[in-house]
Length: 136
Image: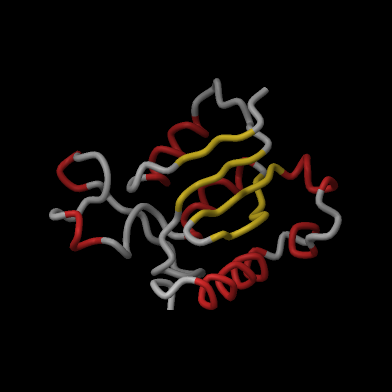
């Protein structure tokens, strides 16, 4: 079985992740690590529509779209939750989701046991605001 799936393609992450998860061969990785946009906090859901079928961020030129890209944290959660994933950690700009079968391996992460998505997001966002000027 697959332990970790890392998805960082600078755009369209939610669409790709959704297609992967729907595939009958989906390996149910223990961890899904996906880049998300910090500019759209939960409960707002955002998915880049990947204009012009171009890979990467949909706005051209690239420099015009550095903050809103890919998918929001809420959109990533919406894709993964039906498959049994919970937010383990938000480490700007990445979200780490853990399959519910492995929750017991992290007894010191309080929001994981109760699936408190907002607490998990807020914990990571607070750190990001203190550490990264761009997050502010």
